[in-house]
Length: 111
Length: 385
Image 1 (cartoon, each protein chain N blue to C red):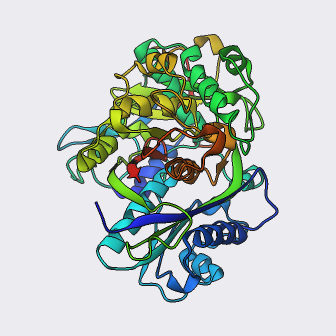
Image 2 (image 1 turned 120 degrees about the vertical axis):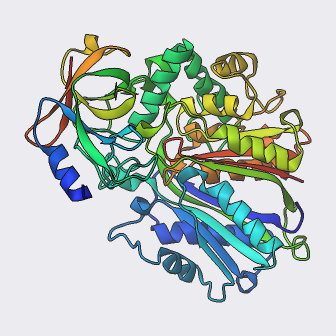
Image 3 (image 1 turned 180 degrees about the vertical axis):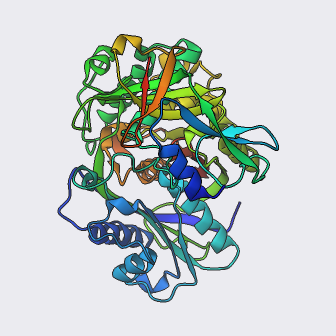
């Protein structure tokens, strides 16, 4: 897969997230590349990831126009950052979250 | 490690300056030159660092080093280098200049870094440090603050350390700032004040974050022959180490991977100096959590136990472990999103015995640790007189 093709497909609105999997060494990664950063193979496929676990998070109160919540979630060991929509009481390391790519290609997590 | 000495330094810091980026660089450079006793004609090397988003519009990014060096008035350079590893650039620049002189590539090198940190308010993107070239999805963040906040939260989670432990770093540094007439913030504070200060990016509060300011820090390195011409003692480079993990934090196995462990170990090993022999520690402090990680990385405390060290040591000039004796950049502010120049300058003041009301008695060995990016870079330098 060429990089632009991967980027195009990742931005498509969906109720799941797509990670890149290397068919040679089986490692998965999130930041797109046209080769596997572990074994340099070009034999890559996109795989769905439906449920992640909160690894860390922050609630940004200053610097932006509105409060914004950033979540770092782990999907089978692969870390991903996106924004959270929902109740602040649900923010807890270890809690399960669902990813969603909205119409604008923005990554949103909900519980 | 003989062969080159730091013989001059200068610094120009302002909360918000009317001066241009270029004037700030020139001001600090001419101060450093003056203190070294060298003339501009004697400078045959130039090394610089900045953050390109701290230059007024329109940003000049191609051959920036030509714009800056020629503005200062340099024209016969036998060594020229741009270092681009954020706040850890300063120690790296000193080492690179030292090595160039030692190896005979140049005799006198001007090292300068800084910029206008206040420009961000007007124009910069909120994700200026962590934006990837190939960003799979859009989302809103405020990095570096929001990334260091997530590091702080994860640290608390893994080691069971409460926010009040991290807050004590800010209290200790403020205690030293009281002794520094040039610090922006000098009123004493306690842990409660830190915890009650406005939340910036949970769990980091306002008093745990440095303030972006405008300014530049400059240094002169020269060979033995010319090292006695200035007003300061020639300062030696005794040890150095650096470590880089350029991956974005989400690609690291743990966001608590500590680059300081490798850089400091190399600096100690190369110099043969042990941490007990260091008289002053200047630790990069854009956020309190960085100081916690440095205390552990350098080996002053075990992993997860920096809080205990901070409870037992008050950082003051008279204590066994003087740390950030100028109050750190939490209290002086941080030019160009890089604290490295400000903490290096304080170390040189201490080694020269000119830190007036906060002088560490008989200081002759200093360790300065710089961190760049989101724990992407660490540089440790040990200097001595």
